[in-house]
Length: 161
Image (cartoon, rainbow, N blue to C red; front, side, top):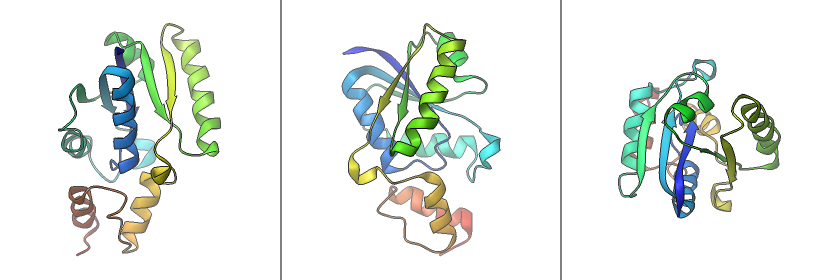
């Protein structure tokens, strides 16, 4: 086992793909700090505190996971917390281009912090929070992509029964 790693994201909402990345990260790192960003540019459906609550529930059975919120540059947060590694999930090749660009930019800001890419189980490789929210808004059943409590939160937030 290595050191601590930071898994930042919006997690709006948490999906089985996110949970799978956390599990995989725990196989490599002794501690994973899941950091929830406000990310107002993405117009999140859930508040930061709601997302943290869902993530804490999703990770409650995992030893070595902490869920926090943060603002600002992720590399600055990692540096302040003395976390030398950032975890990023890659689902499809389309993710890689964006994530690679972000990792190289982060390296310019903080050459002391490394980015590690993890791929989820192929069963979750096409899941995105954005698509799930769109499907849920249109009345789609998203229960195979997120835990039951997330389905309930989506239903409640979107005013569906």
